Image (cartoon, rainbow, N blue to C red; front, top):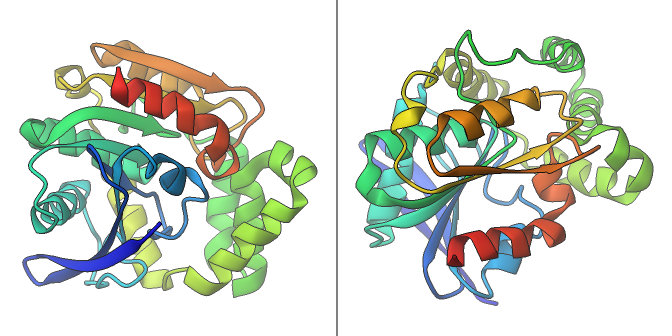
Length: 268
């Protein structure tokens, strides 16, 4: 399937994005430190039925790395700039982790641009969300102090979780190779991390009008899985699909299982 690469701009910030497939548009918004190539099989699987758009958030990939810290509001405006550049008035939006924060902000600040919302491995943010589990806190505190290759492998294994590491060792190597090739600069990573740390939509998410599907791995050590229940309770017309024993990189690990679930939700 042909993939076309393009460029959008939000002010002075250049944003790289790709489009593949035909049908109703779906915008994928990724999390901390991952670019448009870091999704695994899910976008390609959905591109059989939808027009799939993936892009590099500011700070990663082939997009610009302006001086941080960033805000989720800025990054949501970047997503709108991608929609504008692609000539898309309204899209389904799939956000994972920090991308889930961005997707929530997109649905709240630009409700006319979002048809349906899929939130994976994410939370409403702020002090009332369930905090990062201890294993995740340890990983994020150690990562900036580690040698590059050691730190990237450590973060891959921590984010993938025990199930993926033990059952899919080839997947560990696949994601690690991707991270070696595509990992952002530390400055870009920290600028994005600041956006996530300051995000708080807890009181606002009940205002999300878009029908919402919440996806969550039960063994996530980056986002406490109880936050998925919070989102499903706070957002009207939201439902939760949980995958026991899967970690924070559930979307990459289980793309083949998630594709029909997401397709059925978007087409319903």
